[in-house]
Image 1 (cartoon, rainbow, N blue to C red):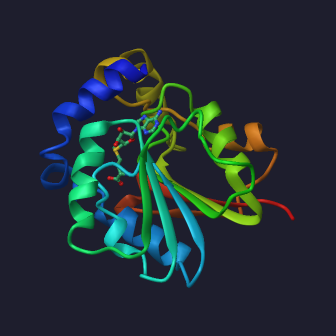
Image 2: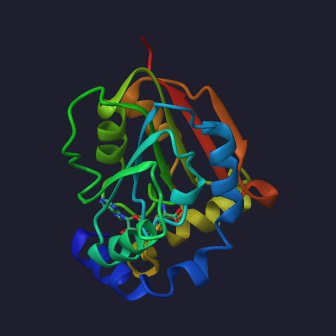
Length: 205
Ligand SMILES: C[S@@+](CC[C@H](N)C(=O)[O-])C[C@H]1O[C@@H](n2cnc3c(N)ncnc32)[C@H](O)[C@@H]1O
């Protein structure tokens, strides 16, 4: 997977994304919303914000910045702002693997359904960790490699097709642990049967 093919795919998806994936990913977004329970004054970075489908979930009194590498997905997200979303302070075209923010600048950093589609998840994790402040929270909602041996084997076999299917089927959340040196404080299902999970980390103070 590379940025050129990712941009090309999401250019195609942008107009139909919400109709196609809106419901599929709704449970995961709802669980992330409950976990984060964003409150007044909190500065939140949503990485891979896409069409901004989750933006209406943030209460008006927090400050949300969304970034995405796809201009067309962001255009849809910007369209939502016309409806009035006071929590959103910025939407930027940016590569999640090279975030243009200072160290320790957000209270929470969230990525939903993004980690398996970026070219280099280690760089994504390192950047999310860098911009999260000490004591801050990092939440990833994604599919991670199955713990069930048969499914795990199937996912391994599908790995060479990652580029064709547009996502990495066998990413481990332990990769995050390896990059940051932190164990998650929570791993919980984010969909029926736990195909998608939410994994939360806290950055030590
Ligand atoms: C499956 S969509 C998820 C969108 C949204 N988070 C949601 O919950 O529906 C993946 C998003 O990640 C974005 N993306 C992929 N690679 C990226 C990168 N390196 N930097 C920033 N965004 C990226 C894509 O453009 C796309 O909008």
